[in-house]
View 1 (cartoon, rainbow, N blue to C red):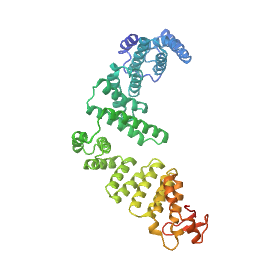
View 2: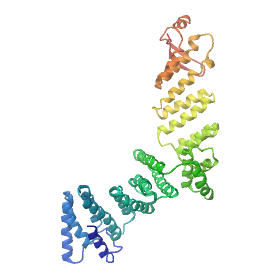
View 3: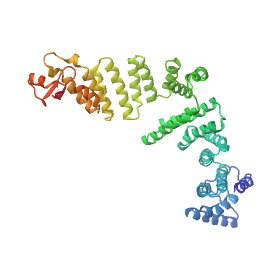
View 4: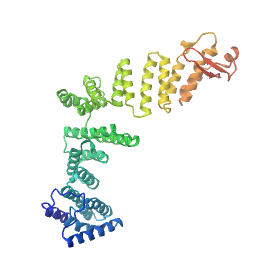
Length: 438
């Protein structure tokens, strides 16, 4: 079959070169037109009945005699040969069908003058059918590379993960790529998927792309040792020579984050370039975390607020409020911290850790809030802390708070009853119910 189709391609290359297949290009000869119309009906009827072998014979006549008849003969040809491939039990015959399918894409590109989309389809078909054949891996990678060059960041979504997996298989089975080549492929794929994620408004589709991205990273780290030494030796000189290279800046930023060498000025320099050209939630979050770790809370707060501007989900927004709340808590600004934790809950009601954080703010306020005249009132901070720990699902912390409840004797002594409402003053301003530790 491969030889028959190849013969057709060569025979008509001079006659139909640069032809278009958008309309119906019936033969001018009446007898040939009648025959072509008959074959078109016969193969489509067989295809609709999923009789792929029956469709193939009539379809082949059209390929040999009217290869620029209409784009539909190539679209339907894919269906025919995919059906034959899936149904083949003989490996040799299956390989013939695969070769024929791939040649079909070549014919479509030649006779219909379609390449950008078709080469991507050919690359994926080659991947789907030949990826387990080591001898085909280099050819498949070349097809993906060509498709990427033609489509740029608009490379179809379904190509992204297979593309990186082909890079992985080439390294694993053929050992035919240098570290620089691996990095170049990875950067290109990563740039495309980042572009798609940033331009995708559908949350479910964006989540799927994020999943692809994580899996692509998984392939990459198996074949490329990500370390700071490589970044400093190989990537920093490139970056210093061209400090506006956003793709390289992203790679450096990510590698140094994973390599835990973010103290190096190069990491911040790369982050600044990204922030100027392609700001994102993840970027400002990581820069904010770095500023927080270094004790620069003012800078961290500014960066966390910038991160919220680009948050895509309620969870992301809530996380930034939690980070800012923890800074205020560490600084002793308990009331401000509580408000930030409440904002985290408002953004994402499932962020139950915020309840626990508020609980600890109350739990640690005993010395600050006790008046020394009423033990029940003084220990009210533990009662309200318990309430918040329970709302956060933190049984262990709730148990610690319960141990600090007033005793039955104290409740009796200060003229209270278990179950009475108790107003907690100080900065807390909450109402709770009296309970005892015994």
